[in-house]
Length: 198
Image 1 (tube, rainbow, N blue to C red):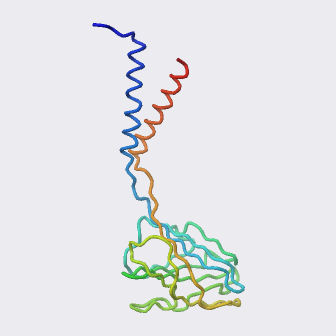
Image 2: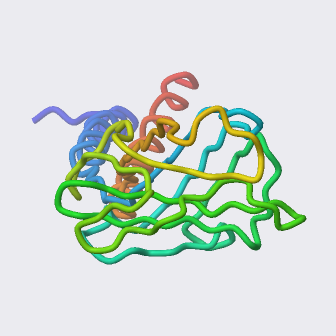
Image 3: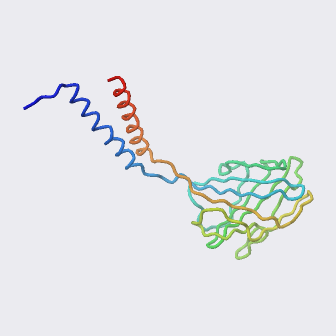
């Protein structure tokens, strides 16, 4: 029986293990849902500038009652407005029904003047003045409002601007998958370094 030098046997072992670790890491990379993002935007309307509000939730919102969320709430991840607004006194409303998502705004500036407001909140089967987006609770993608009426203390170009709602789900690797992937990448780096030094 022929024996191999120890260095050669170790190199063959490392060469065989590294690709297996990488394959195992990539194959086991399960993605876990991290949350759902709802991004509402309006174009500039007369004296009121553009508006973009991004909300993040643990999952897509189920059908339910109207939720009123202050703009300082933890679900609000960003607010961009072409017109100054006071986050502490402003809020949004969101309601998901089996066939629509309703989105309303109550935005005030620092002087407590009305920047933008959907006057009537939804009640039962009536959407009120809220922006109405035709989507099911599980629907993702970009949606354009089919209705929505706003008022303001500023001069508006139209009281019925068209809003956009972009709904997406975000995902990140599960911790165990990230660990497997890290070990695989470390193995490849080690292997390449050994190959260079040999």
